[in-house]
Image 1 (cartoon, one colour):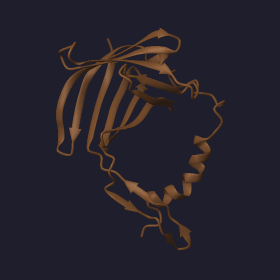
Image 2 (cartoon, helix red, strand yellow; image 1 turned 45 degrees about the vertical axis):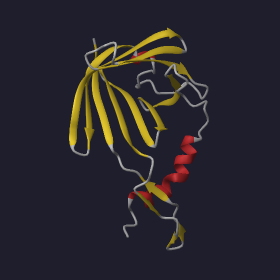
Image 3 (cartoon, one colour; image 1 turned 90 degrees about the vertical axis):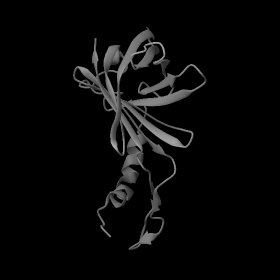
Image 4 (cartoon, helix red, strand yellow; image 1 turned 180 degrees about the vertical axis):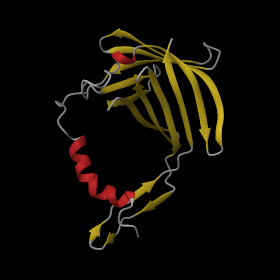
Length: 189
């Protein structure tokens, strides 16, 4: 067994990660070299969304992302997929969350609220729906936004650990299949 595998390393750094995650909310939301969210993300953005599965790229469609302020705590977050701007339109709001300035909620305006967090220059959201997980990411890089969604089943493909090894308690670690990936580089227009 490779004692330096990722899971073993994770077991050693988990206590540090818990300390970092549970750091006081009074810490600065970002540093001066990172774009401010969502104000620096405001604009009309477009690009091509490429969709992948295990076979490779299976589709590419035009995509737009429109982010505009409504007030200081609410922004529009409109996604348009494809060439039919009306049929492909997904009209949401971003609303400031209660968990500090890095916490924003995507209100889908149909009772669904998806919590997201702005960390390290990226707005990230993780959620499950009908047995699938989705990890969404929106990162500001230079003059572009990098949009991506990773997805897969919430059923683990493997569960390992859960027993002592050389006197060290190894926690159970579950691994999940990545079934799909979507990515787009979006530029202002």
